[in-house]
Figure 1 (tube, rainbow, N blue to C red):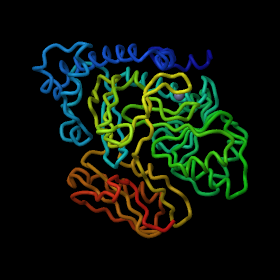
Figure 2 (cartoon, helix red, strand yellow):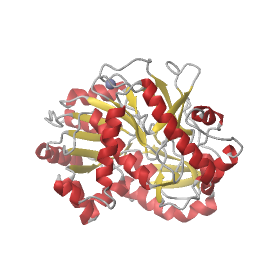
Figure 3 (cartoon, rainbow, N blue to C red):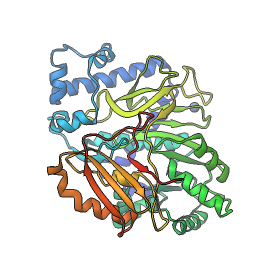
Length: 440
Ligand SMILES: [Zn+2]
């Protein structure tokens, strides 16, 4: 414990995270009235801040008189829904003019729409705490060994390239396997590593956990890890994926929903009856006439980032609430029945390696001029990158993208980049940011 605290970031970050996570655990079991009251207080605080310091919301809320916990929900309901495109059009308008520390962050976007945004210190603490909270629902406790089958290339680079990050990964008991590079030999290597590491928890993209499970099964391997649970995230976990993963590994799957903008927003508990909402961090709305049965637009007001408030923010995903009763685990928070959202195809390259679709969203982290993208595999070694955006601004990145794509799919692959007016939706209405037209 002491060594962990010695590695703390400035300002006692980790202690604050632990305290915050503890608050989450407590608020999971308070009464509905208490939770509503706490949320109203936080919401009023955010709305007042946005009105006073964020240009877009100053315009929208300026004439709205006083904002109090009592009227906060009504004030919120009068605001229009914002989305990634509204921010792309007027990025500065959404950032607080208040002199505070602001850190840059970005996402490739769950539906192929990249976004740069700002976060403050509180968001960083809340983000880490919400991971502790969500991991806790899957049985994780502080100090447990965690295996990440993940592909946040920037994060993986951080972990492998700086001494401090290496040390932190070691102290935090975290081991990484790059989900962006999952050929059969790689997966064999990961299995050997995990056999000796014996993680309590494995955290993976739903698709990567599924790929790994199928690989082990095809080799006739019965893994004796992880010890507590497998957390899947970042994309939709289908019933088929869950069945396969739970057949191969000795533990249950705990699904989770979150995003780069908010961190974990909902997580499955040991009862596996829907995903508990992180109501301490967010006000969640589902735009549907029958939100218990018909999935609707998932709209989030995130209460913990004052550098760039996300207020009535359209996540691009759709969800349904679960019936309104208390979960058998005893937590009283509302639950999602399911989230209908991000879908990506894993790309099987000519060399046989498997590249998770998230790889291609990461290519667009931090770029400007791209409003939407889709990466399509047309034949085994032929690809098209479709872009909606400003060619003048985006063009400067093309060489970089080609290099990143070639790195994943092979130097001899043929890649064309095309600028289009819009990216066609699938018949389901949802979009895939990667699409493989190959059979199987
Ligand atoms: Zn529960």
